[in-house]
Length: 171
Image (cartoon, rainbow, N blue to C red; front, side, top):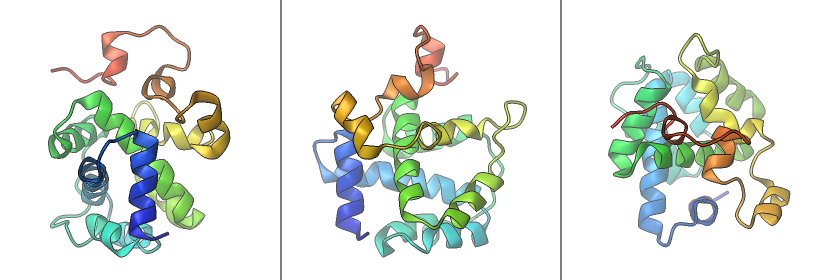
């Protein structure tokens, strides 16, 4: 997949009106992910991505292997994007779902293995909610008119609360 197709797919899934916002979301998610991953795992994950996208995981990172949890990840993505935490969390989930379809399964599994998913640890399972729900896919897009919706991946039928909409983030 080349850069234009990758960015176009993200833009379509997130229903962004312009490429600038799309690239900002991709950069925010992948740079922050690159900061959290070991350099070796970031290189492996980036290996199958378009060169322009690969750079966000590898070349743009000064320090790999930083220790931070899901909430800090969302805060960092939000800061780079310039949006709000619930949008940043959703954008990251959608982008990671697309990455999962592009990279070899072993490289994606390395990503999952490096990010603790249990509730007691760092709650990284939230990053994989779209992937674990079966991914974006044509069927979901056809049924919902735009793929998984922001609230669908985090609430799955439960009532909405302010805490749910920000994944526990506070202003």
